[in-house]
View 1 (tube, rainbow over the protein chains, first blue to last red):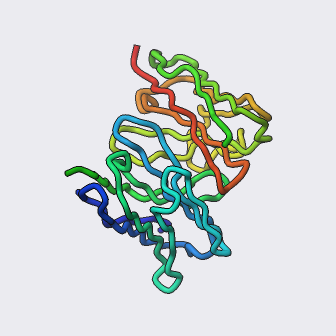
View 2: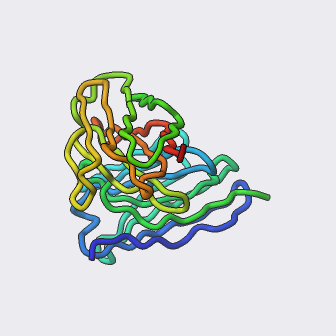
View 3: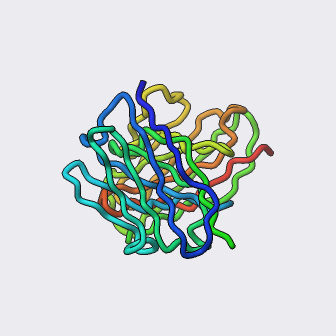
Length: 115
Length: 108
């Protein structure tokens, strides 16, 4: 079965760090474009980062320099390292496979940045 | 960045109604547009890709059209399961995909 299962997330203080994980099954993350998309409470969707098949990475301006996307081909997993977290990073974070549209999504994980 | 503008932001409709949602891009994106349905507490679900291609397994009452800067999502006969929020998304550049602000379809 093609699926993405997420872990990580939680409550962190401003300035803190978190690492989100996304385990893929039924396909290889290394052969696909993979994204992290977030949704702030009551708001719309924002793509924060993407990693290409060849390993090139891109970031939204809102997270550039603070977030790092990576993948582990041996474990078929995608990661998002989030540093210097701010209150406006509070959101549900989704990993998603990009095949034209975003056709496979993780279940989402909540990140809350608050003191 | 390419800005995506959806209208309306909220739509009230009845079961059986034909519903149309519009999405406009700030510059031409050819046919690189997708539509998603999201229900509360759930991840978005891909409905349409390449502006008019139906994702496998999605009901044929959903259809998409358009190219360039103007796109529409049509639900031919609204069903109870269709009450949700719908988003358009452009992917003319995979490095800068952007979403519309969403359209909430409510029960009239």
